Amino acid sequence: MPALIILAGGIIAAIYGYLMGGLSAKMMADIMPGMDAIIYVSATVGALVMTFIIWLIAAGVFYLISSLFKGQGSFNRVLEVVGYGYLPQVAGSLITVVAAVIFIPGITVPTLTKAALEDPAMIEQVTKAFMHDPAMMMLTQITTLVSIVFMLWSAHIWIFGMKHARGLSPRDAAICVGVPIVLYVLYLTYNLGVM
Amino acid sequence: MRINPSRIIIFLVLLFSILPGFALAYATPESIVAAGHVYVSRAVYDPGAFFSGDTGTVTVYVTNGNANQSIVVNHATIGDKNIRLTSNSYETSANIGPLQTQTFIFSVATDAFEGTYYPIFSLGFRDAESLYYPAVVKVDNTPLDLSVIDKPDTFTQGKKKTINVLVANPRNNNVTNVALEVTGEGITANPERIFIGELGTKAKVPVNVTITPEKATTALLTLSYDNGDNPHKKTMELPITFGVDKKQADPVISNVQVTSEGGVYHVTGDVNNAGLETANTVMVTALAPAVPQDPYKTYVVGALKPDDFGSFEVTFTAGPGNTSIPIELSYKDTDGNIYRSVQDVKISASGISVSPAVGSSSNMLPVAAAIIIILIFVGGWVYYLRRNKK
Image 1: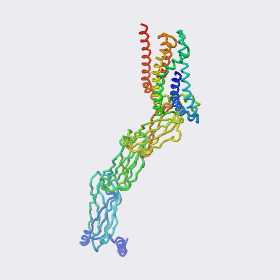
Image 2: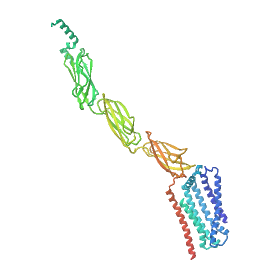
Image 3: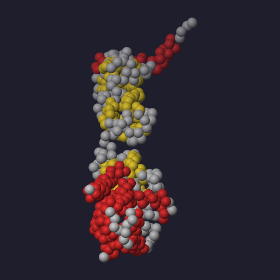
Image 4: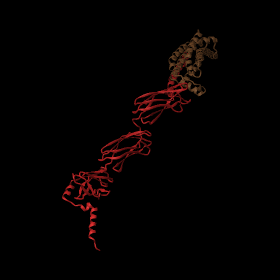
């Protein structure tokens, strides 16, 4: 069941990846003609696979930290807990896909030229400008906020799950999950600020 | 010495034969009556009216009104202290046939003040007393009138402007060789000299002159003309002051949008003519550091009437680090003068103008929202843990 939840989240992330891959393909249309399919496939499959990898990483991090608090219980149990706790993020991913469908048509995508490819400053400028596109900025802000909200919702579930899965006190479970998650969402917030 | 009487007789005969008019002159009642029918039909001055200091001629027409009797005249002259005779008097005998007119031409000069003068023409008859005739003439120092009837409010450096001048002749006689010349330091007048020719009494002629000043200066309008054979001139100073032409065309760029495609920027927008004159050949192009590229290195919008507008599109490339590009707008007025204005257009690689201030302020709201969410989460858990601990 947890794996199905992760798969559902992965499929939704893949859809989002497909939509964003379209922007990347458009940006590199001049320098990599005919590579659209590769970009689409890599963005879609990458998003799907990354969902499972993140599942494993999150479970691993929680498992390791909980070990410091002399936590009991298997890694599989932690995986199961993290999988269940991922359910809110599936809903969050659905919202981000809807936002992407709305905002992507309004994004002006600059096209990289072959000459620009030889100039790192130009690439940086193009990327920066792409990220500063008003529609792109709006999409990024919405998806980041949605991610933070649903990530914290998941964290809430994970704390209770870790408490039972690893036999931790509420305080230890909160630290075990809360610290990495809060650091992560602070990182997301920082990126939002410097965008 | 003994004088031979026959020789004396021969001498007298020869003398009388040489000078028949003089020797045979004598006044009779008939000749006096005949002289009474001789009259001055007219006296014509050239010029018709003199300036003080002018010279000229007067032609006196003497008509013999006798139907079948000739008249012999032997002296004619004219003049007084105001209208001085500068040529010789007629001192030879002349025969004026019945109903014939004889002309007597004199050169005269005057230094008199303005006024009407009556120099006396006198004509001596061989067989009667002399004829006296006052040949009236005016001395009039009224010059030709030169007036600017229309000129621009202000001039602009290098811009051609037209001034309308009216040349009028208020005198009672015609003047000839009328010409208007426009000169001045730092100005180019076209034409520099306009020949008008003869200008009749009370006549007026409009003249248009274009002036292109290079600096604020004074234009000198010189009107030259001949009164008879006497040259005269009248001058007028026309200040050339620089300023903003309130009527000139004023193209303004608006609705600017920037897009980027293949590394080439496309700037589109509208040009509105906010002035009161037509802007001709409106062109838009990008200046350095931009490098204009096809297909729209330069966009020709064309002529824009007041309150009219046209769209434009220019394409260019710009190196990295350029956040704004100068866009040059040029147009010509009706005289072909070129006007240029430059407007900076913000660009970014995405082709959308991004104001850093706007961008940063728009980021603050989601950041604040994220922080509040995190604080609620952390605070909620801290509260929950403390409550459970108790």
